[in-house]
Image (cartoon, rainbow, N blue to C red; front, side):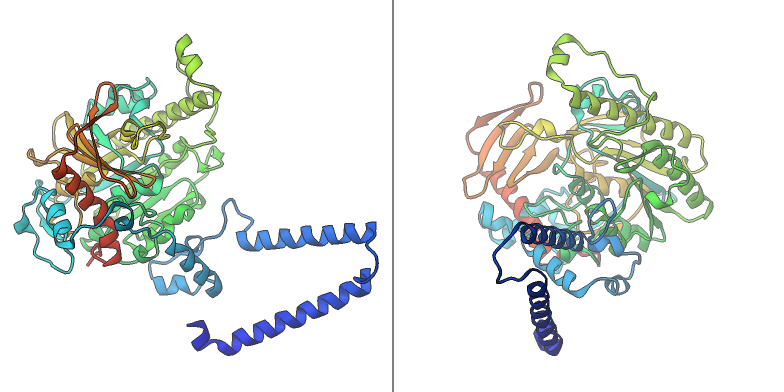
Length: 523
């Protein structure tokens, strides 16, 4: 495109750079004499020149003196992609697009091939909807989903908690760091075996907001072809007359969130610059208390507008370097064994988790007394665990996360089924009373017959868990089969289950196919 449309410009720029180089060379020759013997002054001058040039190049590449380097999302401000593109530097855009090619890994090159028709048949089968529900051949996973709730459509608030694994939640067998979440688990629809799809925040956003299956490529939040017209529940709810909003205490352009959200259904972005009088500001932005105080203001305004709304709130206090207000929480008492196990860094993490839990509980207690509470479904869920380590091909215990739905219309429910993050969006839409045509593969957990299964992407390894049986796919290797001991949290190798291996491969391949062929579009 550049050669066809801007050949003269490219030629002039090259001529200018060559001329400038000649001028600079002549200038340096007059000052230091390039043909003279090297002396100390020449060395110092050359060193300073090199350092200055490196600094200029670094600042030019970073693009800003702000907290984080420049990216397209930083300058996005409109829901119109054409308007946003006017603010971008063309050469930067070309370089950014080139970089994206390396992020679009194709699962078939890692795990092996399967006939597309078989992939489609298996992924349809595992939704639990029945093959008759799929009638759109242009988007093979699109189906009509009818809600269990038939009244006036409800509002939705999703609270995504940063880096909160089940290992820190006592009601899920973890450390006693989250008394507020433990309390919520006794009040709402609590998922005892909920598993994240990945190990990064963008992977959690991908699952909870789009219902897209994980792939070995980067999450769709950061990929090029999914920045406009990609299916999200925000797009769906916007079409149903909802106001859609993202609230974050930090910089919303981080991890390309702002670009993805504005291009896919979110009409209102509230981030650090919009937080009114934050009382504590850390590296990641306003504290969770400040975030939730602003969220309360926003939700009250949305309620007063007399329009249905969807608000997505993303916390950040429980993130390295774990900066939180002093004097709010009291650290737990550790046993001698725990003190030897957890170093100072881990104890800082634990204290940050306690604070994040405190801020969440304070917000929920306050929200219960607000007018918006009654007609709003709330989901509290983690984006991923704090870390995923170990010798297992997929450390399943580090994908186990908390999740609870409040105001579901059900009495207290402790759900023991294996559940994936991608099951949450269709379940929420069903509870809200939203009929929809959706390409999501997640199951509506309101159905008692919904089978328990989860999928996890760990670097280039893909795990598919059905009940306690797990198939793990590795690059260029045959599938491996295991039984996951829920009590000991260990994998025990078993003979290959070819049927489960085929289902796992179909789901591992589906994301790459759907992304490449635009099978996961909003319309």
